[in-house]
Image (cartoon, rainbow, N blue to C red; front, side, top):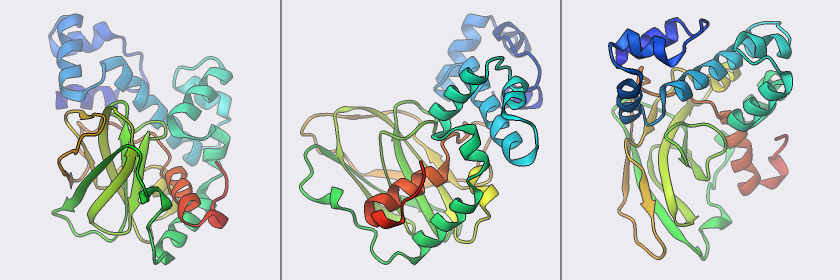
Length: 259
């Protein structure tokens, strides 16, 4: 699987139909799709699409290409389609993403200055509470972002989530019954804005299986263990500054700005 993922990443600018990937893996398209989804949680074509959106994020920050040209670079002939898909997966429009570096640094500074990270959401929960602890074998000081997503890939706004100012216990209250995937990543204090917007080297974690939240059930505590990124980790498409801004809007509304 790692060889196939490396092949996809090395050829992401080329046409990558399912038949080509299956042939590279020496499987039929049907069996290749099944094995890929068992390992990654998403289909091969979904993974390719996610990598191409990550490529678009890189081009927005590292090139002067127009947004239309960047959309065409990743195979989107329509500017409207590219903008819609990008906004859904990243949490802001391509133009906003390209111009958000300054605010990203401000959000991180505000979080570092916060003394009290509690929110009113913790009072009188109406639904289930998801609890756990974030651990890491690697030294880390900064923000931990934890989200419950509908798919095993960190794209779009998480359905529920929270931020921590250090490793340790976390609480996500008022989680309605459903099926969720737990994913987490980190931002070290002092991280440059571009590294926040393109989080390719951050510590991270993703649940291999979904958690099922039932009505009125007490869930066992989750163990979220952070690790360095690997080939089998899907790209982080959601803009981390968007999540920081939303959290700041909950704990200090006067600091929240933008999308």
